[in-house]
Structure formats: C-alpha cells, structure tokens
Image 1 (cartoon, one colour):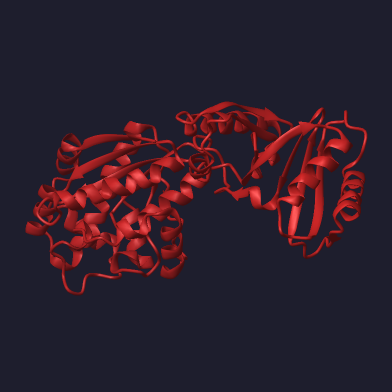
Image 2: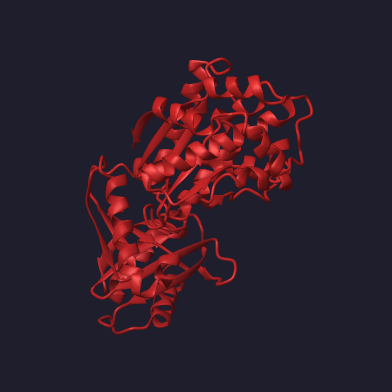
Length: 387
C-alpha cells in the first residue's frame, strides 16, 4: 500500500466553513505524523490523501491517526490510474491474496473525468472476479468487500480489512478552549476526551494537597495528561497547591459544608485561569448523584459561584459506561491507581447533600475569598506536554 485515504463526516456538512475545518484537519494530521516517514498530506475531493513511502511505519501511523479528532476512518490503499482494466486487474490481485470467496465491490466516484458511473464499475469488476476466479457476489453479507475510490484521473483500491476507525468529531482547535478540572480519578479524563472530540483544546487544572497526595500520585496525574495529549497534539497542566486553602476552610467551616466550599473555590480558581488562558468554559467529570457533591442541589449551589459555562458531558452516564470509555482511551489503569482526593479531605462522614446557597454564602463570609484565590493562583505551576 502506498497511500492512506482519510475520511471525515461532520466536516462535510459545514458548508461555508468547510475549507476552514478541512485545512485545520490537514494541519493536525501533519503535526500528528511529523515524526513519521511520509511524502505528504493534502486534500482531494472530500478526502485527505496521505502519500507514503517505502520507509513508512504503518503500525505507528495507525496508532497516531486513530487519535486525531475529525477522522471518521482511514484506509491503507493502493493508488492506480483511473482505468477499468486496471481496476479489474488490481482487484483480482487483491482477491487472490485472500481466502474469502464471497465478495462485494463498492466504487465511489468524485469528479467527472472518469466516464463510467460507480454502479457500472461495480458491475464490470464484479463480473470479472466471478468469471476469472469463480467467486460469488453477495451485497448483503459478503466475506470481504473491495473498495474503489475514483478521483478524476486517480483511483485508490483497498479492502475492508484495510479500513481503520477513527475517533470522529471535529478537528482540534475548531471549537475553542476549555479548562478541565482533572482530579486523577476515572471520570474527568473521559470528560476531557469527549470535549477533545468536539474540537476543543483542553487545558488541565489539578488541585494538589501535599498532605494527602504523594509525588507519585502527582506523577499519575501527569501520566493521564500524557495519555490524553495525542488527542489534541499538545497539552498544558496547571497544578494548583490547595493545602493552605483547605486548611483555612477546615479551621473555620463546619465539616459537613467543607466539600461544597472546596468545590466552589476550585471553580473560582479555574475561572481565573480560564480568563488568563482565553478559555470559554470550564469542564468537569461530574456525574449526577454519583457522590455527595454531585446531587442536583449541590451542583446548583457549587455552580452559582461562577457565571462561566460549565460543561459536564458525563452527567447522565452510568459508571460502567464511563469505565468502558476509560479503557478504550487508555486512562483506566492509570486512574485506578491510589491518589489523594482533595474533595474528601477532612469532611464529615455525612456531608451536606442539599446545601442551600444562602447558607453556603454565609459560611464563606468567614473567609477572605479573594486573598485565598490569589494566593493559590500565585503558587500555581504550569507544565507543557507534546506528542
């Protein structure tokens, strides 16, 4: 195989903005494959063509392309001239390499230079395989499918075995920037993945309590960012020291309200970082009623601290569904490693599950909110990650 045809889905519906999304996807593919030995990447009639060479590592390229948002699927294929005799010969050669005899032909045509329609190509190539090899056509349940994509004077031939599924969605950078509160658990990395698929660039914020979180646990959070970075090519992690702030809350706030205040301060700090980074929304892995802070009443009370949009893509997911995605994207085994959870630090055995906003605001009057937020922001450290 000397080429890869990249297919996209939703981008094709963008009408006046289609070229913007296509160009962005081409640029992201080039960046994802910058260490690979390829000849080039370019647009061709609703597809993106990657030209390979003899030194191209298909396994490595596959691993990287599978992580590029905007790609529905891609196929390793053979480039041939647009000629029906060539199609017959090439498909026969592919068929002889298979042990399957029940087949279908599926031709697609872009451009007007090739004289035959896709249905006529299907008929002629299919009839040739039946006559030359005695194979059987079955359009409903074939053992193998042969594909011919005709783009004016060029064509690309491959089988269904050469097709690899991508993550879909929209290209990274097409939907703005969000700030993700990354806890180190199972949920928040999956939430980040879903927003990456929608074209968002995700900056991660982790709240670190040195009294309950070891350096090894902090490295675990960095490992999560490393696993997620291929989905957006580069990542930023902001580590916010949270120990001093939590100690002040513990000193002045009843135990059953502490978790609510922890979360409100996290959102305040994340909002400040979002404004600094030019991000348009906050992102969490919260899941309705999963823990005490995630009841409907508590979510409302916590969210009231910021006017900024808060995305919660997992809000209605079952835990098993979240775990399946975490396994798929490679974060699960990292997430289940032990870590210190700031939100459960020195809280009551039975925290408030229906905290009222007036009561929470009354407790916050005991604190110098702006001073605590400013001190945490001043001590925040940033680390960059690249593929």
